[in-house]
Each structure stands twice: as structure tokens, then as C-alpha cells.
Image (spheres, rainbow, N blue to C red):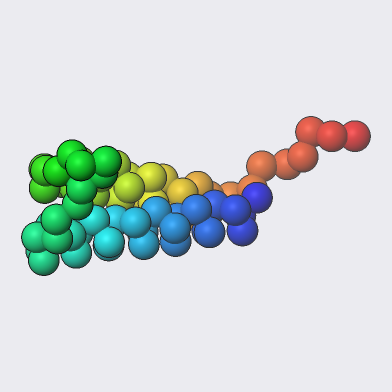
Length: 69
């Protein structure tokens, strides 16, 4: 499972970087004609950074013994 958690952490880190770039560069985003405000990217950065940290922390935790016999 560690590989899954590492890949998830990397993916969420990438999403956080893209959202942060949107904030810094002030890239406009329109979905179906609706403009998405920049504060939505702040929320996205907080959430994706939290998920990335969670995934990497879980990947670094010691493995539990398998209960399958």
C-alpha cells in the first residue's frame, strides 16, 4: 500500500502547486460560463496540501502486520 500512498501524496502535491500558481499568477478560470473566484483556489490549496501531508505521513508510518492467515 505504500506505493499508493506515495503516488497519492505526489498527485495531491502537484494539484496544490497548480492551485498556488493560479493564485500567484491570477489565472482566470471559467466553467460553463461561470467565473471561479480566486478564493476557491485558497480552499483548494489548503485541502490538497492536507491530503498530500496525510498520504506522505501514512506512507512513512510503520507497516501493520497482516491479519490474513
